[in-house]
Length: 111
Image (cartoon, rainbow, N blue to C red; front, side, top):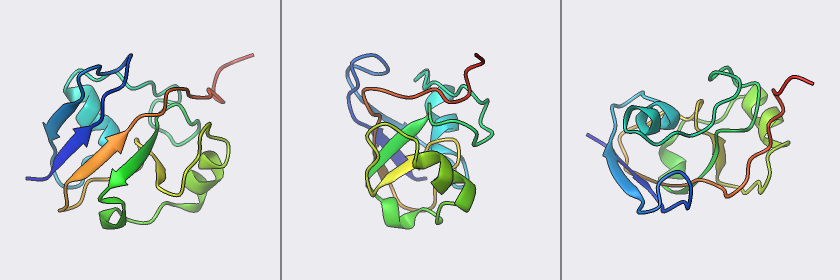
């Protein structure tokens, strides 16, 4: 069973965490199931960037991002080559190391 290492984040998981994941489960669902409350303003519909994460290890094991995800990531704060939306990135066979950015931008918020 693959594992996801969440690096320490001052608000979400100050100590960091090592969590077991099911193959095919999203990074976001693994986090939520284990009490790491990653914001997901669009309710996992790939319509915002609040669940933006950076996959520090294991990035190449993930399926390629969709065009819609890439379009949303272009709006993310702190975009890096290993950035993904955690609601869209599905765990494969390889362990992952994930960093949650310090800030997010909520494009789904109503005005």
